[in-house]
Amino acid sequence: MRTFTVILICVLLFPHQALGAKGLDPRKVSVLYLGDPYPGVTPYLAFELDAFIVADPILCYHHGGSQTQLVDIYKYMRIYMPRNEREYLESYDAVLFSDAYRRAFQDKQLIWVRDSVIERGVGVAMVAGLDSYGASTSRPAASWEGSVIEEVLPVLVPPPEYHHNWIQPYVSPSGASIRVEDHSDEFIASLPFETDPKYMWAFNGQIVEEKQGSSVLARWMLPGFNNPPCYSTWVLGEGRTFAMLHDWTGTTDFTLWEYYHDFAINLMLYIARRPLPTDPVLVHVYRANVHQVSIGKSMILSLIYFVESFGGTARQIDREIQVLDQMNIDAGEHYLDNDFATAVASSEATLEKFKEIEELSIKVKNEALLWVYIIEWLSVTGVSLVSGFLVWTLMVRRRLYQEVRSTRLSKTPEK
Image (cartoon, rainbow, N blue to C red; front, side, top):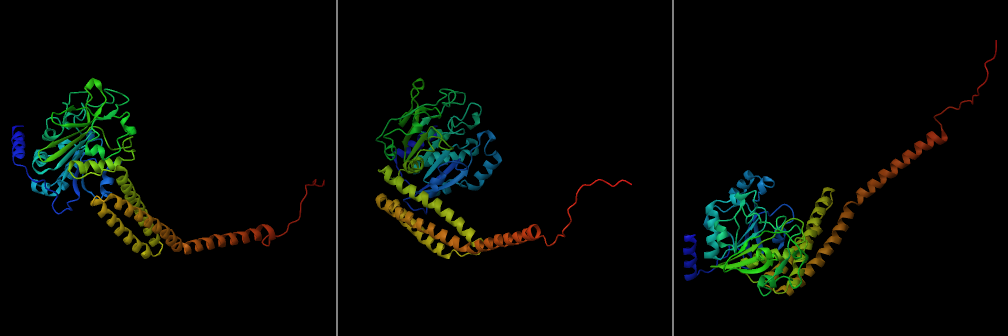
């Protein structure tokens, strides 16, 4: 703790310029996603589709062995985690701990993260989960209490024996409501929190304590626990950290929220201290269009493979997809320049182009399958004709049968 205090004092006295990831477009944010990037419903897909975010995932959530086995976690960490501090600093603008198992990390790796927040302006966020914050009473080894990461988080993690770590089932079986405290904060203002989303009515999460000097953006409505933080942030040295005290994976009211992907993307921009959109609806329209085009394009590519497997040609579709990709890149450039109105207009033009390609794909598919349809029709018709002829020959004309006389029952003559 003394070393941490010395570092903080030095940084405050001699501030450094925050550095971005080496070789990356400075408008983008490079994120190290640790924990649960997949499988299932997670923000990772949103990161992959968004022009602002470049995410490197490392699967390292454990849940006591019910999810990823330790041997696999350690293997992933050896392969994908930066080898040294320099490589780490040159690669990332933000680090996301989303249900990340504490024992997966070497002490030096966590020190890199802590020091990079203070000295280099790297953002850090932790999202609630069975391997986050105080974890659970049955798994004290997973708790982040007393770790160097807790030193830079905007909350205090309760010790493992603190059995009121989770709201459900210990505190309230139905969960707790969430109340936004600071609508003026740029992250909160970047999302439509004027009306509480459904997930805020009653939700499950973890209980922590507020840290002195942090800013609480939203609270759990739990008077018996002094309404603990739900969203909290802290500007520390050159960097910003964020604590999110409910999960964001699986199928829940939060992940079903229309602005779920926007929340995750904006949070990465926020902790990296990049400009945030001021019109949530406009940006949401752009991101929704990009998502729709991406999903539709993957289906068209599958259709191309299907057509070519029947000997058809999809060169015309390929040429149109190249045009679509360039239109998408152009829209993304406007988006990266924060010219969101032009980005929306460009994305809508891209969506119209996609619909044209979709119609073209159906036409090409029908042309490729024309001979299949003809052969199928001839086969069915031929079989029907042969079957009909055989039935007519055997059952109607009976040419293969010999007439027999009718017989009657009669008494045997007596001798």
